[in-house]
Each structure stands twice: as structure tokens, then as C-alpha cells.
Image 1 (tube, rainbow, N blue to C red):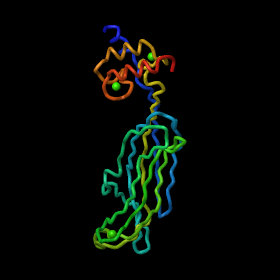
Image 2 (cartoon, helix red, strand yellow):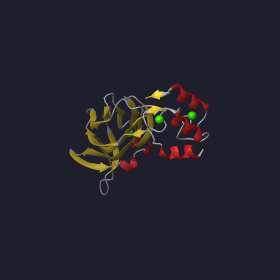
Image 3 (cartoon, helix red, strand yellow):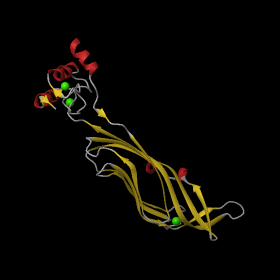
Image 4 (tube, rainbow, N blue to C red):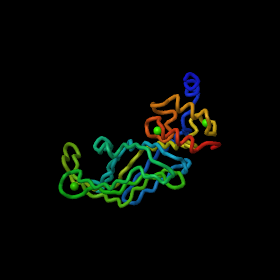
Length: 223
Ligand SMILES: [Ca+2]
Ligand SMILES: [Ca+2]
Ligand SMILES: [Ca+2]
């Protein structure tokens, strides 16, 4: 048991590639947005962990022929739309967001703003943010004293944000200690952590048990 414990301490976790942090700053006056990240990650990774956030939303409006803005409306947005995270099985493409939006911000019974928001890691490993079918209508806004509430035309919407993407490569899950071979060391490690979680849980079921042992035996040899 003591040997197995020592081995367990020496084990390495699956290879976590570096997280790519991609920032974007896009806007649309009705035209499509097709943003693509400047760098890519390995599209063949086994798993992708991601976080995306839209950190800033602002609008320009037209009132009496003048463009007014941008006005920050981030705080008025649905937080569930602005922030998302998850984990998806590779290979890419994976879809992070697929949201058709249609809002009646001034509650007058007509849609003021609509768009299809689509965020993915594309098949080549690049982050992609597409905003299509953009509709900018008119909306009642409080222009402040002395103008008060006025009907204005939405002219442009701005969105800034980021995507964090971490590709995870598990080249040989039964290789518990990461030495590129499945052998007795991996077997001992698994037995040493029997009934536990983490090291030796090669099938990712959350517990180290006989199915992990069978997987190791079935993957015996070099990776
Ligand atoms: Ca409306
Ligand atoms: Ca090994
Ligand atoms: Ca297991």
C-alpha cells in the first residue's frame, strides 16, 4: 500500500494545454458580424473547457437626425446571455452559444432588437462569434430633462468580450502515471486509490473500481 501511495503522488494529471484567451470588440448596424479568433487551439483535443463573456454592450441611437451614443446598456442585459461556460467533448467543432434573441425593451408590443447569436470553436480550432439576422428597430428611451421619453431609432450595437478556451488532450487514459505505457505501475496506482476518485479513474466514472482495472488490462502496453 505504501508503494502505491508513493506512486500515486508521482502521478500526473491529463495534459492541460495552455488556455487561449481571445478578446473581441464587434459592432453591427444591421450587417452580419463574423468574428474569428487570431489564434487557434488543437481541434483534435479530447475535451474543451471554455468560458465566454460579453463584458460590454452599448448602443447608438438616432434622435432628430443625430447619432447619440454609445450608451452602455450592459447592466440591462440578461446575465444568462452574457456569461457562459462549459465542457464539450472533442474533436471540434463545438457550439458554445446558439441564441436567437428578440427583445421588446420598451414593452410596447413590438420587437426593438433581434439577432441570432452563435459562438463556436470551429473545425479548424478557431473561436468564432457570428451575429446574423440583425434587426434594429425603434425604442422609447428616457432622454432626460427636458426631453423626457422619446421614440428613437436604434442605429448600432457594440459588444466587447472574450472567450477562454482550454483544449485537454488525454492521449492514453489508462496511462495513469503519464509515462506513455500502460503497465503494472498503473495497475498498482489504481489499486492504491481503490474506491477513490481521480488517479486510476480511467473511465471517468467518478470512482476507481473494477471497470477501471479492466480498462487498464485491456490497454496493456505502450500508448
Ligand atoms: Ca418595443
Ligand atoms: Ca503508465
Ligand atoms: Ca471508474
